[in-house]
Length: 294
Image (cartoon, rainbow, N blue to C red; front, side, top):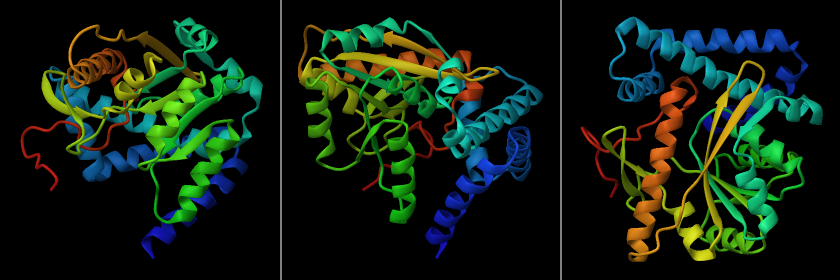
């Protein structure tokens, strides 16, 4: 029953929020952000704890302001999501700025394929739509949601932007590798994996765990490996790309660890500059009271 209600709420929001005047819609979500902070639920508490680790020197009032900004950014992402089908090509293109865009564009032109790892920051769907409009074949994965109807809604949402979306399962890695060999772009959110298959990294001076997938794909296919950080601007988003070089020596396992750590280092740089746009409302560090899943 709960899953069905959640699916219904998302679908209704996709319809109703598109009909509201834009200013009213974003104002509504800003008020929602403030309400969530004031209620201080588990997700807000986790976000606060994550931000404290990113900015340990902030005073209580400064941290409160950062938390408000972070929740406003998170709610902006959701308002964007519900209203994105209203955006035309001109708005998508004119509201994106990019640092080192040539790393991706030239990589695709080379035919080698490009894999981009990025954290939960800014609006990565907006970034993906921007590159799809350039004629780049973008492939990503989506974790299956319950109920199935909600998963299908998100699937259609990203497919409408021009993305090829694969369900996250045992077959997806093989398909992603094939798409890279065909010279396409793979984009994967890669800043959290608390399973035993995750790779331990040093993140803001503490142990965290991130997925091996992007690094494994880069090593398996010889694709160009980039990280991206997406932060919000007043009118849209800014994307910063960095290239990660593949280690020349070491075992496969050692190379994967090096690449994932380099990704974490790049994510850390972006988060230090734009902590309010890092939408991490879940545990990411594996110290203190973390318990390994059986």
